[in-house]
Amino acid sequence: MADLTSVALHTALDGLQARQRAIADNIANINTPHYTANKVSFEKSLARAVATGDARAAATSGITTAKSLEPTREDGNNVNLDEETISSISTGLSYQTALSALNTKYSLLRTAMGRA
Amino acid sequence: MSLFDAIGIAGTGVTVNRKWMDAVSDNLANINTVKRTDEDAFAARYVVATEAGDGKGTQVAGIVTGSPEGRMVHEPDHPLADENGYVKYPDIDMSTQMTSLMMAQRAYQANLQTITSAKDAYQAALQLGRG
Amino acid sequence: MSIESIASVGGSLGTQAVGWGQGLENTDNAQMTRGVTTGAQAVTGTTGIANLAGVTGTTGTGAVGDASGTDFATLLSGGLDKLQSVQSNADDLAVKAATGDLTNVHDYMIASNEAQLTTQLTVAIRDKAVEAFNEIMRMQI
View 1: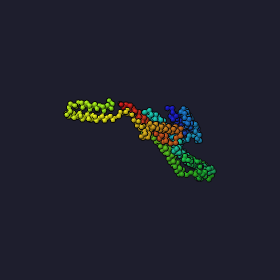
View 2: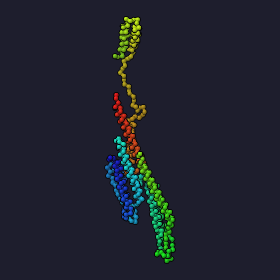
View 3: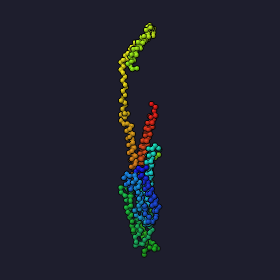
């Protein structure tokens, strides 16, 4: 399925999974001294790729990981537990939405082909 | 937090209440910190919360410290006692701090409940049309 | 036998009948044949029937649509256009959900359900139309 919507959703799923992994990593390291939290971002580059209308650009739009700029505590750790928890919930919900969207696309094709 | 604003807003509430609980626990931990009479007593910390504007929740505007006067207590056997046998205790009232702690905890739980409800509502929306 | 000849047949029938009946003037049969003769002569009135020209085809009934205002082809193509727009609306909202720009998830869910139901409806209509066509083709003339 090479149309723009399916490709964009696939890239979004990749990005969201990378974010979930980074969040789990951050929460596991909440007490590690001098640990800086990692933040994954992919939405802006995906939006730019989608605006061009090219499916290949959407497929290869990157997923970048950057260090968080939060202030550090005394032990040099800058993981903000509340923010990570909220982000984890929000990422999980976005993942479910993107999966549901991809599911809808496939079921439309199946209906048109004449199968349930 | 464009997917479901309620989650982000409740998140700010969670952060502010957690900071409040941190400040209260710091005050309670230092409630018996003794200083000499010529030094400042341990000053209680108060978190000032303000609205974040535009319906975006709350934020911590700043931390205010209480009075450094403290109260003089007569303890001649204390190693830090001055020539009259007085030492300085912080001017922190335990019952007030415990009440603040309970309020902060309840507010924290309420905000967490908001997040849970928002998450459930979102998931119900994802089920629209199934079954 | 063209229709004009009916007149002449009637005439000749009458003549024949009279011929046969000559020997039996006063019998009942003779009476009857005499009646037939006069009746047959009366038939000569048939010369009045003009030649039935070739039956000209009627102009045919107008398109069925003229009676109700829309016709089936218009309905079908309108339905396909609507399906196209509903599907592309659902696609746009799905891309917005992927890039994180979607403010209301229920907007997307409603659009996607609409697209699914419209697709199922269109496919059902197509299936029924094909079935009806096959049914008609199978009819014996």
